[in-house]
Length: 293
Image (tube, rainbow, N blue to C red; front, side, top):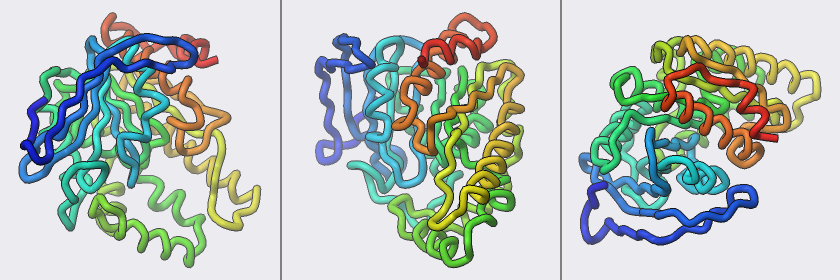
């Protein structure tokens, strides 16, 4: 990737010992800041191979959210995690800042990369909306996709209404204070504008991973938590329509933070999508589950 400047740029290439669930292997690791327009975005890459994997975190989460996943993925292909503007060691985010802008910034980051696509995009929560917008604009840059407990347009009317007004008000205010520079009204508007089947990936491999545990809100009863979980899982099931080669998997023991709660399952899903893209074949749901045990 192209370094931004002597002030913001740093490149560290070193042997990285992978914990990867009991395995030990040395791989190259690079870390730097990349210029994207007026911004400097921080990115960490490791491993070798194609298609390369790009990891996009959820709202307010930086690249360190993938510390239990990235080393394991680096065993079988190149994998890069980055920080959106406002996070990590990159530039402060512009205000106002929209998800559409974030998608364009990710596209600019990928254009500056030494490793070329098409990419397998792995995305958590709000990051899934970012990459879906990117894939819609640049479908040729996408080899496959894994969506981890993705934000969807349906949650605005089907999930958030379960949350009491006082707690929802606090949530709306907290979003506006986050370092990404986005406000709640913009977030809700962009979510509702997302169609369930955008982007259309054709027959490119897709895995939708969905949480099996509901955290709910403070004071939520078991009954309400059950209703919230059912609504969330229903919303997630519609995402399989993005591809004719999609698979839906319920992570029964995981909450929203799947990278932390179910890293084996996440890595197994990434490996399956990478292999399916290489071999131009259907996703094997059973193989994902078997490897994750």
